[in-house]
Length: 288
Image (tube, rainbow, N blue to C red; front, side, top):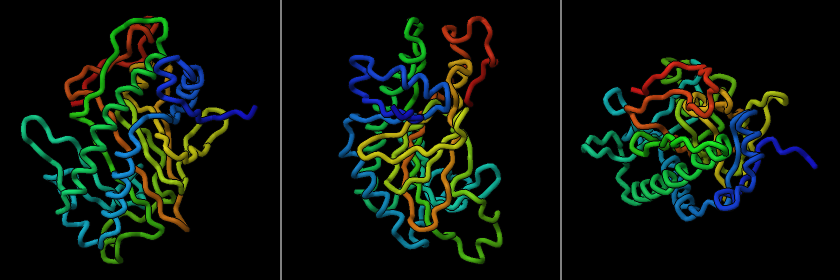
């Protein structure tokens, strides 16, 4: 039987019958990636894709009407750096409006766009919570320590568009870092875990311990999950924050949408007692 480095987990079956938890556990210890199917939010995902493609199909000037600034950190951006190298991509970031009325979101003048992305955010928040419970079930099957939670109020969504050519004109390029050799350079995500929707183009890779870089293949009606830095701390290095990258797009543009599931702003982050065996690898800290 061929080894599948990035396992596909039926979410509903794993929740009800613990099916696939051994494969999930092995992947989280190796590289921090797995794929979930049977998640139940296909309609919200389809509306999100339509909104994303419509937004990025606009002219550059139209997209820059909602460009992020020093005082408005969310919205459109076209010169993202990873590892101090400029990525070949455009992004649109947003989050759930805060309860205190402070809204950092910027929306195009399209009510359908906002409605589709808001619906996707709430659905993805529910899936992220279910997936996190599943991860802890795989990690700590013999322990009943209360599970830490994620917080949709601090979580964000990013629409990614990876074009085949630099979106900046010559004048703009002269003022920023030159493009690097990847569409998205290698990194880990700082939060708990990331739900990633990707189109059929491919290009996402993760770094495994023994096989090096391997593809995280597109799969219809599925969600890619990768673990972040917070979960590596919670597990005391038993589970690995996923090192990942996106290879250059030379013939076909790529769309993806990550939902970044984060802890609450005042949460104390430290290794869990069930994972440390009295030897924590990290001091406690907060995300503020």
